[in-house]
Image (cartoon, rainbow, N blue to C red; front, side, top):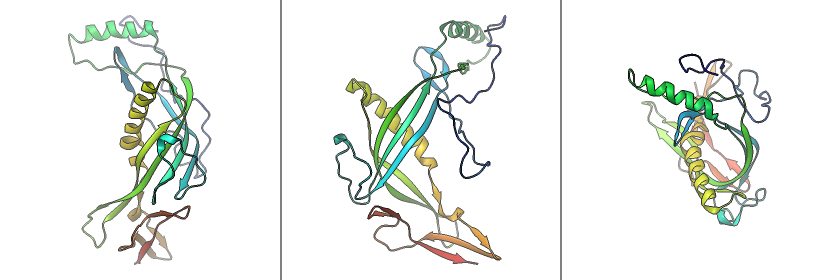
Length: 236
């Protein structure tokens, strides 16, 4: 619904998801949701909200015996690599054509007086579907100087390959893979960071600060079906 000026009315801030989100095992202070910026669609002058949920995930470390990769992922795993099988539950809204038309009229008039700012489409439900994603990747360490004896070390997951299952035609599958890979590499995965210098534990008046052990062939290492990280610990 809209008011006399064409502004949407009766809307409220909702966390729309496709499946219930259980409380975190890490405690009540762990947020159940992470807000993501809405996206735009050509020809629709509003931003669209969406939901992405991980409903199942399996991680397999080299040499790999838990995830059967599709042929497109060129199995078997390379040394120091890992495989992931993730079931993603997507939720997207269907646009309300009458509401979009009202917003277009309102925004067209507003352009005469102020720069245009496209609103977010108000929705109350989502169209949901599940996509199985296979990914291969490896770990890398990013070091940032801190001015102290040791740099800030972040372990990051780098995606080398990504494949979707049972999406046709192939052109559509390739387009979705392209955008999903960009989203994973540039938005989702950069947040999966282990900041080693942040693992500071105060016990009995002592402060333990870990940092990666130097001069090892691989650290962290993915081998013998395990993820291995060697640390040196400073005690003060």
